[in-house]
Length: 433
Image 1: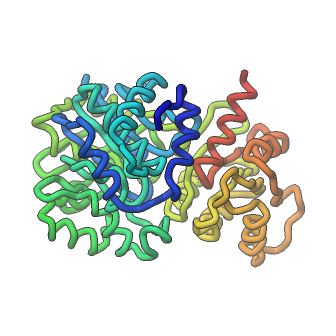
Image 2: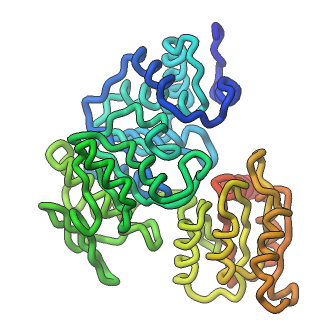
Image 3: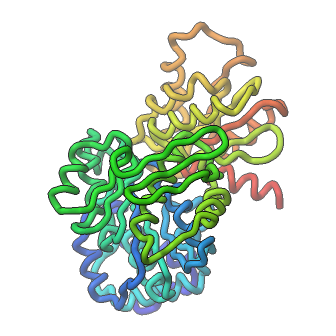
């Protein structure tokens, strides 16, 4: 391409159409381009994979390392409102100018190799962070691990947060198959941390086969705690009387423990003091992960989009105290186990506002309504004021309807996809301006 797009919006539109397949598993093309790039990391590289909990784990690592005064790069996906959220340097989203510079450098060496949107942006992040001379870089895996573009990097520490059934068409339909894909980010002789309390045999076997230094929860590290504080113990290192992470939820101590195990591995290269760990955990901020907005009615945003995440959301909602009615704004991708998500949440939700989403692979609101009717078939019929299901064209419409009906002591929970949460965030943003 001789004349590059001149702004970020044009670039992203171009990337959407550059490669014939949106998701094209395999590393050959990415490796080929990376070899042509002049990039290297002398600082530790941390890669985080897993079914759920990747975003929280990355955010905690970033927060603690920033408190300790290190220069940190963080690459995550997808974004909620702005593409720039995917690449952060020192806790700030990259500017358009920084992104364009990285895109241009990459375009200059790409040659005629076709890259998907995610592959191109992953390589651009590697370029950006390499140029920025950082003390630590954290990369979140997009999908799976073994064949994900992020896996062109060799991790000094690789973390797999959890292994559950999701993305079956790419990763297989059992925890054993998925565990093998996730374990693809492990490297021989390097730390491989698994935060899932019941790791599949395939993950352990792969780690042992390649000679990775495997850290298993309950064997190499664990946590204990009471209502006020918690403690971490690793192989040779304890951290006591820690504050709970500001991210709420059932699995956050598992995620935080994996983070502290990673910091134990890196303690000689990136020493971090007790106070920095406490403050880092207390100040983590991650939009859309059981995010409770201030005001009435209570609004909860959660990007939960598979049964494992829905179970955690249901548990968190159950711990919140009494609300007369709960409204759900729910939209999801067609390839998700929507019945499994509904099964976990039907006991918590009275009124469903289900929505179409702006992607061809989204389930329609009508599809979801049918699944809900099926899920509630075993219950006696209820009057409209007690239980309802309505369909909407957009998350904003669904949310506006929930808002118009909810009393000030009720709550609205928005979940099912990044797109559902993003649609509501955009709507609230436009209402406030």
